[in-house]
Length: 58
Image (tube, rainbow, N blue to C red; front, top):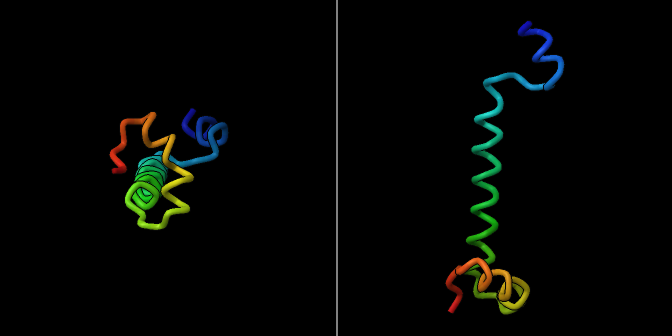
């Protein structure tokens, strides 16, 4: 039964936590890079979204 689950999902059980941690790290990195960037272009591009998510930008 284990081999059929592996074949159906295509991943091993040990890979999932690593993938989740990597996705969370990259997502938080992008959020904080856009949120605290001094570049006016990034600030203007993300301004409305940050306000809708209650992310402080001023």
